[in-house]
Length: 138
Length: 167
Picture (cartoon, rainbow over the protein chains, first blue to last red):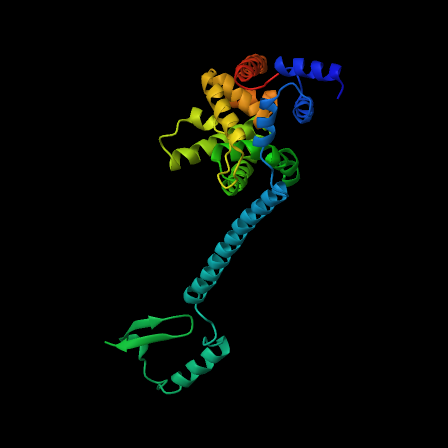
């Protein structure tokens, strides 16, 4: 840096009208007129770790991923719970008889009663569904 | 603000944030973690951040407040002004006696300056912050920051000249 430029930058520096780049240039100039202050500034400037920005993005990625994983797990648990409840509360139709089976069974039962006696007239209904009525003698 | 914008506008400031954070916390490992924590905080606020008129200033302010909170938790007796004026000292590195003397002298010169002047000087010359970033951090106008900085630099020059070989 020539003398004229150095003077000009020093003047700008002292009047706080220099840019960061100009100030860096001045601080690193071995013949600068800032002396001990420049030595101090150069020594106290911290070295920035390599890939700091990259590490920060990775940390953000991890954090958002862990949130997503947590959400996914929570939804999975809720779904499993809902499925379990559906098994408990919705009755299985596996053992239910078909209409034809019910008719057949009814006929079997009826065949055991006498058709001549009017049982119905003297009885109370104790059970009734679409196919079957159970009477009890009074 | 999406991930790319956040990375471009906010995370890219991490290396510039680092000197201030390490100076305030006085520890490289803690500073790195603090920068990450600050960025995570800002990530959670990214929706509000996109409308901010001075994103850089807001990022620096968030980092400064975060560091001061950490310091308050670990050392409740330290005032925010003391913390703001601290400069990083790595005790593991043995420095020449002469330099230690210089540091002591500069520390006392900074303490003799009005607090705002000293803070502006440290933020500009050690942390490498732009004027608008300092203005946001200190809640001042850029013109006022320039005036404070100019006064501080002239005062330091004058005092160092009488003590050492400045100028």
